[in-house]
Amino acid sequence: MKLEFEYGQGLLGAELPDSTDIFIPGETVADPPCLPQDWDSLYAATLASIRNPIGMPPLKELAGPGKSVVIVIPDIVKGGNQPTSHRKVAIRACLDELYAAGVEQKDVLLLFSNGLHPRATVAEMQTILGPELFGEFYPTGQITSHDSEDYDHLVDLGYTAQGDHVIMNKYVYDADVAVLIGHTQGNPYGGYSGGYKHCATGISHWRSISAHHVPQVMHRQDFVPVSTNSEMRHKFDQQGMRMEEKMGKKFFCCDAVLDTKSRQIEINSGWAREMQPVSWKMADKRTYVHWAEKKYDIIVFGMPTNFHYGNGMGTNPIQMMQALSAQVIRHRRIMSDRCVFIVSSICDGYFHDERWPYLRELYDLFQHDYMNILPDMNRYGEYFATKEEYIRKYRFANAFHPFHGFSMMSCGHLAEEHTSVKDKNNEIQQVIIPVTGKGAKSMMHAFLALGLDGRTVRNLYYYQQRETPFLGARVEDANWRKQWPGKRLLDNSGHPALKIVQDKPEHADEYTVDGISGATLTSTGVEKSINYWMGPQGYGQFLQRLASDRNNLNL
Image (cartoon, rainbow, N blue to C red; front, side, top):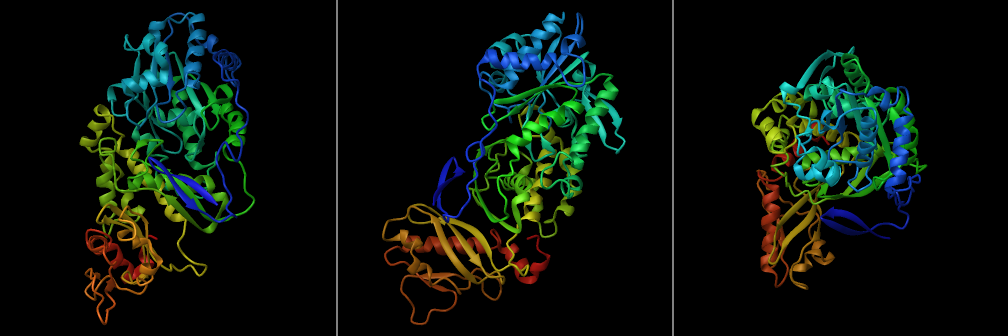
């Protein structure tokens, strides 16, 4: 069957066996029906939830004349931005209840709970809030973003019983009423967004987040597959309740279970401790459908360049690995013990240095001969989290906080732990590496399969090129490709040694490949690109380690 997968800025077609099972959230497995999506219906449903909260008094009873209110709102990363998005409707419904109770507009602050994400830009504020709310609160300076490095607006609350350091936003701490507008959406970190996860990650400090977004929590058995009963979830709850204890008040939560298109399925309000389990019942029907009764050996999916955290997430290797791990966490229950992921991704090394200024340094460090396993990297968390250059860019240049990248790398390691390239005897059969290089007319992209000596070709496959038809384009022809298996790409000293010749020698050696007739520039491009990627600037060091001791590689 012919299928299309997300790839870069578009789609990539692929032929898969007719026996392939197809899963498209919201399509092959339908979401529960959403609420009527007109404003009046959603406003009424939201207001009914606010007036009938779970586990605590209604918002109107908590508020009153002279009382200050902070409404905490998720950032641009998730939740939808349509005119009837949960944020827009819930904020307005909460404001109407607050005003009816005697709260004045001047005593209300809208706070984006961006946590370690970039602070909201003015354009993002307008998109999230809509023109009416933005115009009501922005001119008077009543919209701001959480800043986890602004120590004038943070409060140290000490430690939980587990020893987790809790530091929270001072605006929320000082307010008489703290409202959390949240989304109950499937999330590999602790099962679902919303509830106590909202405050434990969105309005806290990196040291609080370092209690849960770290290897010692993510690499527990209760973290994979995703669970609402994991150590991470317990830490969210404990940190949230520590905030409530020290504030002397409960968060008033208004969370919506959202469908695939960010439409409200159900709205629940109240005390997070009692409200969360109610929300999860509906959210489980929407997100973690047990749609398959069998285990899969191969899972195929696409990865665009721009998603979730923004442009570059699907190309820089650390964010890409985190995205792969998210799929592992979500789908582990249907993965065989030796499941293989096949992913359509450009992965061209675009790091988006403005958005993630620290990832390149982090990745380079991770590639060092003696720094390629997660325990080696774990000790660098403090270094990245406190590096002043990266902190300034987070605070003033709309970059992610540096500890965010470190936590992404911690999560990304799960993809390596739970997928496999080994056979039934637990042996690696071959290594496949991507290679790119300039031909006569285009950039050419290929996969090169090598034996475990790191030098002998098993196969070569060009999957993308725009060379001249019937000439250079013959790099894809089976007749030309069949001469590659068995060729050696490194000499006995470990140096790249491939030669592609136009005049076929009488006795071709193990390093020589016959070029494509009439396509000298294309052939030269193949030779140069493969020799480059086999060398020290490409995969050279990795291949040397593979040949010397593959048992100690992180594969």
